[in-house]
Amino acid sequence: MDEQNSTESNLDYQAGRPAVRDGHDSVRREKPEPVAGGNSKVLISWVATAGLVLLMAGGYFNGYSNSFNSSDTFIYPGYVAAPRPLIDGASGPVEQKPWIEDWMADGKKTYGNCIACHQATGMGLPGMFPPVIGSEWVDGGTERLSMIMLSGILGPFNVSGVTYNQPMPAWGALSNEKIAQVMTYIRREFGEMPEGKTGVVTTEMVKVAREKHGKRATPWAEADLLAIPADADLPGAEIDLNTGKPVGKN
Image (tube, rainbow, N blue to C red; front, side, top):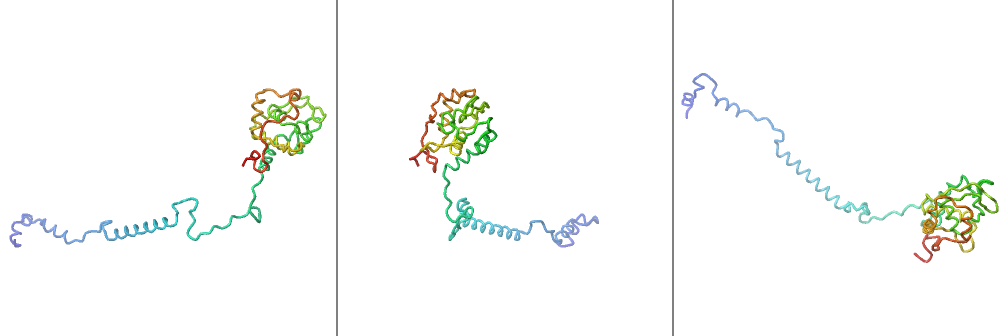
C-alpha cells in the first residue's frame, strides 16, 4: 500500500487529527527504560559466584570440622596435644587424694554447727557445754554417739566425771552422710581410738542407727544411753581409708 492510498484511507488523517500509526511509530523509535533486575547476565554471574563461595565453604567445613565432634574438633593431621598444666607448680603427675581427707573435710564443715558449744578446739565451755576431747561418748562405741546425734540428750549427764545440765539438740534433720562425716571427724580429730580402729563412720552405719533409734521424738536421758554397752558399734564393713570402699573390694 503506497503513502497516498494509506493517507486517503486513514480517517484520522482526513479529519486533521494525528494518526494513530504515527503515535505508534514514535513510541517504537524511543529506547526502553531499563528495568530493575533486567540485566540477566549480571544476575547470573552473581548467582554463580555465590554458589562457588558456598561450595568452597562446604568443602572447608567438611575437611576441618571433624563432623563437629566435641572431642576432636580442633584435631588435624599431625596435631600433637600439649601437656596439661601442672597444679600449684607441681613437678609431676597429680596424685589422687585419699578418700578419708575429703570425708574429714566435709565432717569439719558440719562440725562448724557445733562450735558455739563445743568450740573449734573441742574443749567445750567449762560448766556449760562438755568437751568432745576425752569424752567417753566420743571414744566409745558408735551406737551411743549416733543416738545422741539423731535425738539429742537432756541433762544431767556426765562427761569425764563432770556433770552437765545443758541439753544437746537433735541433729537428726541432717542427712545420713553428713552425720556420718561429722561423727568421723570428731572421733578422729578429738577422740582416742582403740588400737586397730580408724574411727570411720559410714553412711550405711548411720542408716542402721536411724532405722533402729531415729523414730524417737524426745531427747535421750543418760540412763537410756547407759543401757547400751559402751563399746557397741554400729554394724558395717571396715573402710579402706584411701578408696572409701570396704576393705578387700576395689
